[in-house]
Image (cartoon, rainbow, N blue to C red; front, top):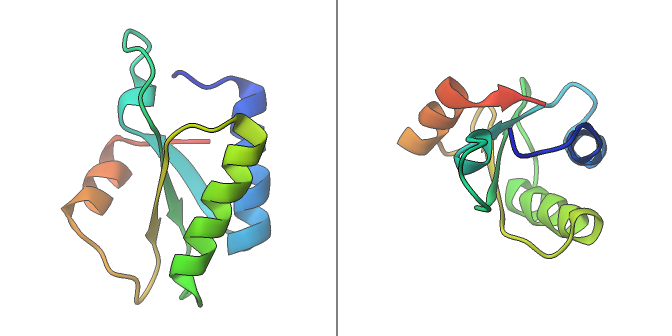
Length: 99
C-alpha cells in the first residue's frame, strides 16, 4: 500500500468529522499496488445511515485531504443507504483495504 500510517490517520480523522464517527474508509485502486508509481488516492467511505448533502460532504473531504496531504488527485466514493451506486462502488468494496 502506498500510504504511510500517518497518511492513513490523516484520512480517517476528517472522514469521521464529516461523515460521522461510525463511517468506515478504505483505500482502493492503484495506490494498493506497491509496484505502481503515483496514481490517485481512491477512497471508499461506507456509512450505515443515509448521508445528507452527500455531494457537499464528498467535496469537503477532498478539499481537507488536499490541504493536509498536498495537491494530488483524490477520488471519494460513498456507499450509504439511498446514495447512488454503480459497478465501481462494488469493485472498490471488493478490492479495497480498510484504513
